[in-house]
Structure formats: C-alpha cells, structure tokens
Length: 178
Image (tube, rainbow, N blue to C red; front, side, top):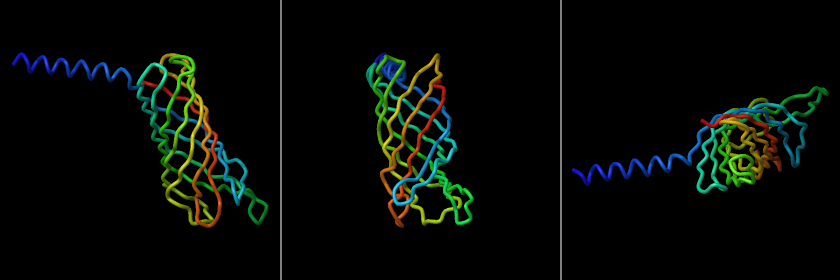
C-alpha cells in the first residue's frame, strides 16, 4: 500500500510540474485580408476569434496551437462598378514555434496553418475546402494574462482549381491566458 501511495504522489507531483508549462487562452481580433495571384482583390476587413494553447518547453521556447474561426476573402469591383465582398469563413489551426526575445514578455512566432472552409458566400469559384498557409508574427504579454498579437498569414495553396489565387491576411488580436 505504501508503494502505491508513493507512486500516486510522484505521478501527481510530476503532472503538477508539467502543468506549469501549459497556458490556455482566448483571443479575438481584426482580419485585413485580400486575395492575390491571378485575381488580385482589395482588402476586406473582418474578424477572427478562438482559443490558444501554449506548451512551454524551456524558458525561451514554446509551441502554440490555436483553434480559430477566421473570416477571410477580399473585395472586388463587379460589372456594375459596385464593390462586392468575396467571403470565405474558415476554421483555422495554426501551430507555431515561439521564441521569447524578452523572457515571458515579447516573442516571435512562425509555423504552418491548416484551414478548413466552413462557409462560402458570394463565390464565383468552386472553392477548395482546405487551405494551407505559413504564419509569422509577434506577441506581447502585457500584464497578468493579457496579450496582444500581430501576424501575417501567407497563403501557400490555391483556394480554387480555377487559377492561382491565394489568401493573404494580416491579423491583429488581443487575448487573455488563464
């Protein structure tokens, strides 16, 4: 019985130590998106919102994964010289490596983003259901759990088989780590 209790305390202690390197948070912000390639669009302003999970391995390096609803696309002029929005809504999963330039304050991040189309409004194309992108940005932890992020999402895959058209997004966010 003693060995069992010792094993339980060691396991609980190791889980508590490991849990100290995990941060869960929520975030939301503005998207400034456009389409580039064969079809260039003007910027479209929309939003993103979701959750973030940061796994801290050593004091200066961590891995951050997010689950976001992200509204993207672009604006274009139609045949009647009126501006129309090309709306693409995704569930995006960026997975980024974070390097802390200033310990526990300022970090740079980069990694891939996997996006799954959930809504397509006013589309003139047969849009693909999957989009791959490269993400890079910075994060500033302000006070307590409050943070601000700025990042650029560069589309790597075409959003349609009908041409070379990619999503490009600038994201500005605020959030809170619990």
